[in-house]
Every structure is written in C-alpha cells, then in structure tokens.
Length: 401
Image 1 (tube, rainbow, N blue to C red):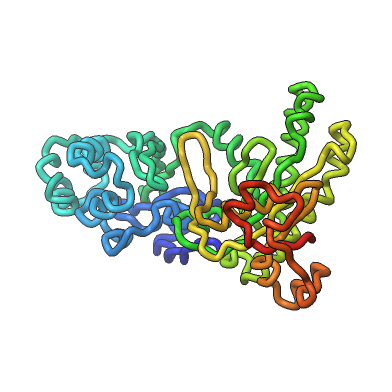
Image 2 (image 1 turned 60 degrees about the horizontal axis):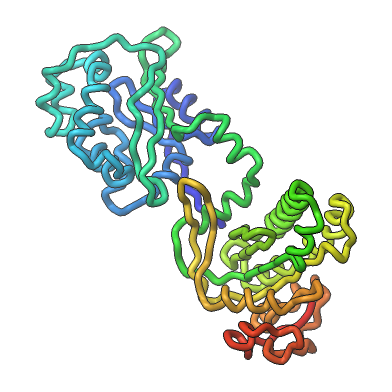
C-alpha cells in the first residue's frame, strides 16, 4: 500500500479553489496563499515530500507566510538552512516588500502578523509593485535526510475584476526539466509508489529474488564490449520490468546480477508476496530465449541462476544519494538468498522451504505447485553447493521449481 494523504479542503475563494484543485490534480508541489499571504492550501504531493515529524508540523493554515506558526513549521519540516535566524531574516527582507504592498493595515498589521523575531525589520521595507510572476530565493531543505536546494516561482492570482485574490508558490528541485524527465519519464508509477512505501527504513517481511548470469566472464570475452553492454542492458531492463509487473521492488544491480523484493505489505499477504516472487522469476526465464536471439547468442549462452528466499526479519529502506536511488535490505536472509542463488548452477531456480511454505492453497495451485508433497534438500547436500553455502547456510532447505 503506497503512502497517501487526505487532501486538504479547497479554499473558500472560488478562484483560489480552482488553482488549488488544478495544481493538486496535476501532482505539483504548490502552496496557495490568500491576498494577505495567509496559507490556505498545500498540495498532496508537497505534503508527502515534507513528511510529518511530530506535533510541530501541523500545517499553518490561515497564518501569514512568516508568522511564528509558519516559521515553526518550516524549521520542523524543511530544516536545511531555514534553522538559521539570519537565513529567515534574509528571506523575509526578500518577500517583505510584496507583503507590505498587499497588507490592508500597512506596517502595523504586517508587524502583528509576522514572527516577533522579524517585527523590527518591517520598518526597513518599502512596498513593491506585484508582478504577475517572479522568482523567489533558492529554497534550502532536508529531503530524505539529505540537504538539498530547490527553486520556487511565485504567481499573482487575480480575480475576474483584476483584483489580487492571492498567490501561488510553485516549487521544484533545482535541476532542469530535461534532467528531471530523464530520471522520471521512464520510471513506472506503480514502482515509484512501492519505493515510497519503504521511504522510512523499518523491518518488513518480504520474498527475496536474486538472479545472476552464468558464465558471464567467457561471454564478455566472446562479445565486443559494445555488444556485451547492449546485451546486459537488454537483460537488466527485461528483469526490471518482469519484477515491476509482478508487483515487486527492484533492488540493487551489480553487473549482470539483480536483487528484488516482494513485500507482504504491498502485495497483500505473505502468500501473495511469495507468489509474486516466483511469478517474476518465471517471467524472466521465459524472456531469455528472446533476449538471446536479439543479442545473437545461443540460448545456452544466456543462462541465469535464481535464488528465492523468504525474509521474515528484513530491515529494508530506500537510500537516496547524489548519485542514485536504491532500495536495499539487511539481514541474514539476504545473505542466505545469495548462497541459494550461487548453488543454482545450470540455469536452475532454487526456492527455500521458508518461501514455498508461505504459499496458501490458492496461490500454490495458481503456480502449479503441490506444496503438500514437495521435498527439500539442505544446501550442503547439493552437488552444486559452494563452499560459502556449506559454511554459512548449510541447513537451508531448498527445492527446484
């Protein structure tokens, strides 16, 4: 289940309500203010990004942009440079001339509306005519534990008679749209929602899929570098899509190897997660002949080994850095899954007993598995058992599916 919020009530003013509804439905980061710069609406997507850090993060609806309530909220959720009094003062001096131009009671009313720490700056302000649109100062905030900088654009909102009805603050990451599009246009929306579900690290039960290409080194030597890169790219794209289609979350890529997770929370149950994991592995295997043909390889040269396991105590979360966005998990079961996968030589799919026995009757039947009569073999007894498997996961029972 993806994280969501209940939309705020639309502003009473019809024009502001139209702006709020349109921006909210389009998924923008935006805030709507009335003619006195009092906050009247924040879009769902912006609230999801800001998150909730406790009682101090109650949205300051009805309060002026630089009121004590608004600044307390901004410091709590934005952090970044907003925690510095000098930064807040510079921001107020930048916006203050527009506040003064639209505050009916002039300086005295503005002085009462803003935080006391800013009241002594009101006398320094000179009213400035309101343009139709203007850029704000760069916005410093903390996103997913990382200090980031974004941009903000302000729009004046006029009513049918040309009078100021309010203002819109439209925010975005500081990178340009060409870079944002390159990062997001090819992403699957459902997968992004599942990744958002693990934004906060926590323990989550999940099925684990690990797959790796066999004999990759000889294949890399056999093909030109350009051919091998094209093959790996084709393989990884296909693996990712099969995982996404089955309802999983793509984990790390290491060369031609891949890790994926199928959460009980997002699939609906332990059984559904185990079924999705097996479905994804079979879907990837079914695509291998086509990948081999398109890469001018024989089917034997395009052999994957699969290890499927259940993680009851996985500690899972999303890692965001300046160079990547990745879901990862820690726990003994991750290492055990790697040992299972390493033993699945010959293009086999090995699944642990703990995964198979998560399946209920309906899901097992849908997969064509008779879990009541399945027999298992400890990894240490497999002819293909690796030294690491015998050392670290000797008693893990598996079957071939």
